[in-house]
Length: 407
Image 1 (cartoon, rainbow, N blue to C red):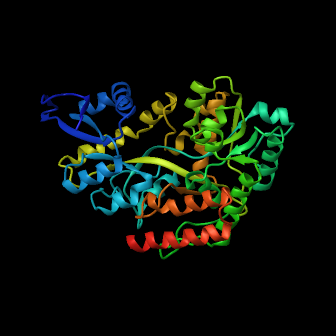
Image 2 (cartoon, helix red, strand yellow; image 1 turned 120 degrees about the horizontal axis):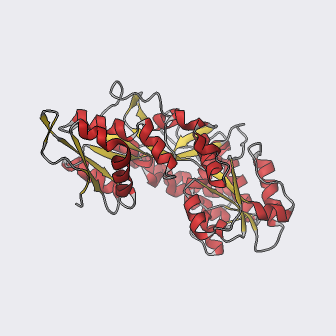
Image 3 (cartoon, rainbow, N blue to C red; image 1 turned 90 degrees about the horizontal axis):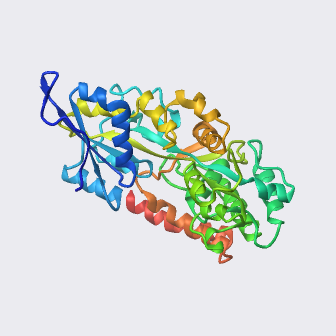
């Protein structure tokens, strides 16, 4: 396993004691470099004074599989990432330290804390997050003579605006709608649907879900919205960058892509539309830090976790444009008021965490397999292979098999 030293004190005596070495397991990619900078520029000096060293071990390939293997083998680090989509399963291993009375989580966004709470106990602190927002092409809306989307839009007014943009021509679409729960699910929540009942079952024939599926897929069947693959793209950001699509529903991660791939595209960002429930729907995409219950340096691990999510650390993350921090106090940060499209997009994404029916992108102990029947149903409906009722009935049967197996 590749290990990256983030801050080194060696075995020197510090404050009369040998330095405690804390290992962190997380993603590869840019994460190691970001932590190096965060420690060098913000929190490393204080940890050094306290005699703490930090090393980072990126888990390559399938992170979740690698982490579960490490937890099972007893080789997991003192601190490890907990992705929201697999958090219930990771917590169920018993290898994640309960944080109640250990770390004050009252300063973090409630919905993020809830995403890492099981049976009333908190097990992780979100390091950053994203929600979904409506990103719109200003030029296309102006050309169509249609008012741009805004925070007061309902599903009906939003759909009418998309129809206005799609009227520009056969190769122009109001929106890009993928056949996937990771985007459609926000509309299911906006309709008031809850993925699991009190018994942990999912009802795909619930009228609220049927209404959301019908609304979402009808726009594709009408030609108002388009699936990414139908215009040669792999995701909605790619659709948006073509200048053929009025709206993309994505998180703040789209901003760097647009900066590189569509620097001249004039865009704005607003909140998700209000659904039939009277509330917006949205997802929380997030990763938390968790502490290993078997860590030989548990107190030092907790101290490192506190430093990594401290106000100073999260302010630095925000100012660097790296991610959306999870502390509530940053809601009024001047960064969000800079007047640029990027700053406004980040503000909308931040606000989305507490605006309406917001759920973590997770599926109980079933894991991401839970999505597959719904995704297949969306494909069948959008391509005209099945009606809404037929597709959801089949998806229910498939999902029941999955849920029975896990239970």
